[in-house]
Image (cartoon, rainbow, N blue to C red):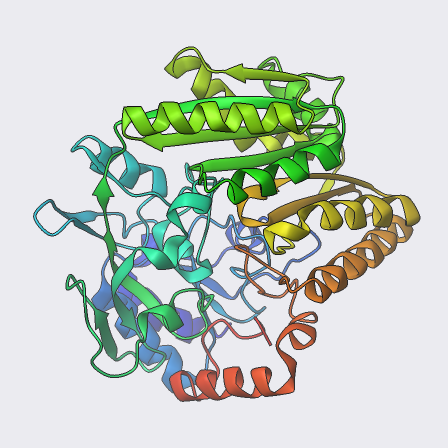
Amino acid sequence: MNPSFIKELQAIVGQQYTLSDRESLAVYGYDATPELESRPGVVLMPGSSDEIARIMRLCHGAGISVTPRGSGTNLSGGSIAGSEGVVVQTSRLNRIIEVDEENLTATVEPGVITSALHREVEARGLFYPPDPGSMNISTMGGNVAENSGGLRGLKYGVTANYVMGLETILADGSLLHTGGKVVKDVAGYCLNPLLVSSEGTLGFFTGITVKLIPKPQVKTTMLAHFPEMRQAALTVSAIIAAKVIPATLEFLDKVTIKCVEDYAHVGLPLDVDAVLLIEVDGHPVVVAEEAAAVEAICRKHGCSFFQTAKNADEALNLATARRTALSALARLKPTTILEDATVPRSCIAAMLKVIQDSAKKHNVTIGTFGHAGDGNLHPTCLTDERDKDEIARAHKAFDEIFDAAISMGGTITGEHGVGMAKKKYLPRLVGESGIRVMRGIKQAFDPKGILNPGKIF
């Protein structure tokens, strides 16, 4: 990047918050997505929305690309900039501006860590449900950009269900306010849902207002062991069909169970094909009834052992076992390709069989875990990107997995985003007309194409 242009950017944010040396740029050249790397031209760490607006105006005039970035936990290459682009990193924009207990909202800057918001509102008896697996490091801006889900998505929904208002800097540096604290608002086009999950391609979030709800009074955490994976999959459908909606209904297959137990030592069984982690929460009477119903359904469908956490520490251990699944799997091989094929709940058993068959056919190791209650599975291939033949076989397996998901009425991503990694699959899902409409929206927001280019399309 032109040194004189870097000096202009430096004048906005300050020298200490401008990174242009090779070592720093190498750090920001990748995110949590394997096989993708592109060293940016400069990294900026602004301290205010005004600084971001000034950066955008300068880059818009020069035609220089800008990529918003939080903690870099993205799993589709969404926070990787072009080789001469500007990365705008949000770590300094980390204030919880307000918790409004009267309107049940919280307003935060984009760099706030998700779990920090959880702690702040729960100390007041309130609850922000979205809890992505990376919640202890991921940022609220990234959660909104990707419409992150989490373990509680089955009952409570995903990030989009809680975003009430956004302050967004557009590509030309102008400010857009959408939504707010009002519960009902049908004035004009509903832009909040459009901006949520836009993956940094339509604007830069500088303020986020989210809905809060009362914190559930109690919760019960359970673990069910199944000798066969199909039994666990059918149990998921049976629980939902019984009109019981757990807060959490998570699935781990045999490969994942072994890795998690080797890593976390939480007492998971090594002689079963699958386990379900189930959590029900709410009013004590309702929780007791739902927990009893869940246990009965699990036993009816072949559960070999059913465990109910005796206390909060045991419940935390079980939940932690699920949250460490990716970390545990990643210890086995140098490269971990984590995907999120999502299907209707009734197709979970069929989807699991496709994943198993594809892994066997292409001779690759795939461990599967995920949010079985909402059909969002995470087939995770353990490989080594230096082994080009094995990597090629892994991608062939995922081609089959995504084609199967689409054919079942599912989608190519439930929460990770399209980014760079899955844009080749998007036309298969939405068709030519869908791509045309999306490109038109992008053109309206960002006619010069400088915001996070190369993503989605």
